[in-house]
Structures are given as C-alpha cells and as structure tokens.
Image 1 (cartoon, rainbow, N blue to C red):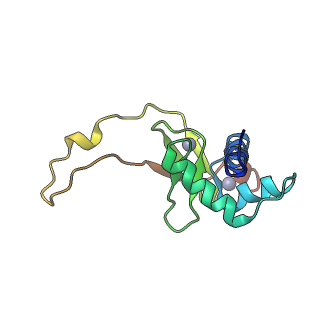
Image 2 (image 1 turned 90 degrees about the vertical axis):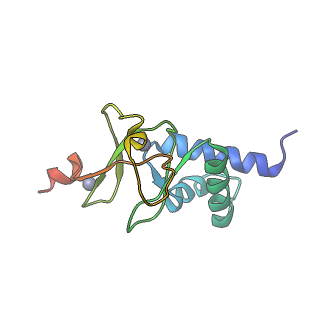
Length: 128
Ligand SMILES: [Zn+2]
Ligand SMILES: [Zn+2]
C-alpha cells in the first residue's frame, strides 16, 4: 500500500518530469494544484528537496534566481534566457573530468561543476 507521503512525492516527481523545463518550485506547485488531490506549497517544496536528495531530480541553484529542478540528472550544460529567466538544456558534449585538471592551492577537493550559459531564447528573440 502506498502511503500519503509516497503518493505526494510521486505527484511532485511526475510534475517535474511533465514540465521538462527546469521548473522553479512555484511552477511545480502551480502545475500540481490544478488537479486533485490538494497538495500544499510546503509539501511540494519539501518533496522537491527530498527528491533531489534521493537523486531522482536535480536541484539547480541559479545565481540571483529561484532554485530550479531538472528532470535530467546526468551532467549537462544549461543556458539561461536573460529576458524571461527560463533555463534550457544545451546540446553539447559535457567535458568530463575537468575538475581533475585543477591543481588547487586552497585545499579544495573538487567534486564537479555546472556550466550555465547566458543568452536570449528564441521566443524572446521574436519580440525584439
Ligand atoms: Zn526568453
Ligand atoms: Zn537540464
């Protein structure tokens, strides 16, 4: 038997997968409240964090913006539209092991990196 928590978590995961847009927590919530059962905003937030800790989705911290949640968990690059703020995947080879090439003098053990390009998305460019 699925308990209530499992059902709520599945709902949140389903919404992130369906949105496919690196949605913010608010956007995930908006998508979920459209249909029953009612789920609170706090529940959505809690489950988003839980799912990213479980490795089901990936939490992206965006400098100067709300965290976004990615349904794709493997390493890949992103581009953020400077006008609408949406985040898209970039289709390019991800350079693996880049962090291994860093010989740091500050005592860090580097574990990874994120590449976030900036640009103007096709939709925003139409309005130029
Ligand atoms: Zn845009
Ligand atoms: Zn992505």
